[in-house]
Image (cartoon, rainbow, N blue to C red; front, side, top):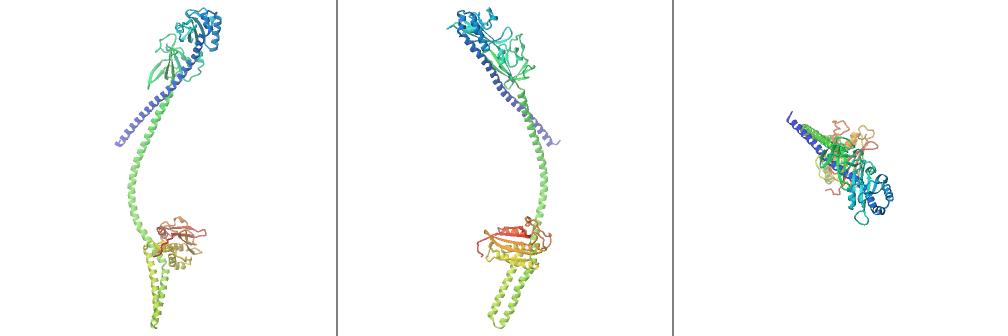
Length: 572
């Protein structure tokens, strides 16, 4: 294994360990956070259950206070009224308030009246809790939760009977059946138990847990079954009990405790931690999975980047060689293109040779005739007329000079500065150059020169070259046409000079490409097929600030349109 691969393996292993550690930390944090939320829920549930129990007992507290001040109860204790009337009052109170039993005793604990006279009559000693009696005689509300002789769970309340002032003349006792209270609770989602002073489940939302004593905290009373075995754990400050037996309790439960000193009991709620643990595990696994996926993506990206770097290095070397070759070939093509442009001009000059010969023959013939006439006039001493002939000869020489100078400039592509040029004259002269060749091929040309000048910024020779190129292309396009006609029209439009040259040829297959270099509808490489004339013309018009466009006519043939901005500068 190479050193680079070994480093990659080590880094991957470290990243995997970091991902697992991060997943565990997320699990731990999520678990403790969920336990916090679960404990808050448990506190609310336990408080609701405790408030519900104390609310039930408050009604009976009101009852025992009401009976302790009832006139009939007072007379029964003080004046010795026959017990039947007091018995009826206590029976009515049991039926009204739902108490299990109500008893009235004197200060010594002897039974005076009862809601169950047939069972409690003549029971004096040993039937009254001395602590409850003592609390009542001392002016306090006595309250006790206990198991009676029948094993029932009851809560007893006591209050002293006063005849205007202390000491109390007797005590009223109200006994409540806890099972009747539990019946009103309904079904609770969590197990909530009320442990008495001996840590025995005295009341609960789960009947299977009643009368079970927590031997680890209680006095180990043999009358009661043990509370399910548990193992105490601490989870971030939370108390968690683990149960080995299932008595309507989760295997692992978060315990929420609340003391109820009013009844000397402790309320405990048992909330299942399994959903919290499952949610935390899922979050931890998700974190590990995401980090693993990110790490895998990073590894793939690193490998791909390295592969691309190697590939780019190879491509860079190849591109460098290609660029070198392209530069060399480009320089060669540039030279060839310059040669082709010049060749295109020379070809156009060759085609115009007939017209040039015609243009030169006319002034030469005139010079010959004028010189012969001038010699005869001199012999006859007609000097004035001879001078006129000499002046006409000079004019014909200037005409020949202008023709040769324009042809030389056209052939050599002599640069002409941005000066005002009469577009009418430039078009007229270009037509003059090409007209003999057009007439030779039987092409009719329609051109009506405007009477006034149209000045544009540009070069006269360059404009003539553009018109000659377009006319030459139109001439080539109409070789096999039945109707051979070229219409040239020059007009103005919103500050622009617009020159349109339309032919009756077959049109152009793709007008959008007509100005591309080397694009031609003729045979490439032939004497009339270089494909550069229109491209050169397009560049010339663009350099003069105008536009050159082309489209096919609806009646057949192509229409070339030149638009150049007019100038108001005078010709120098």
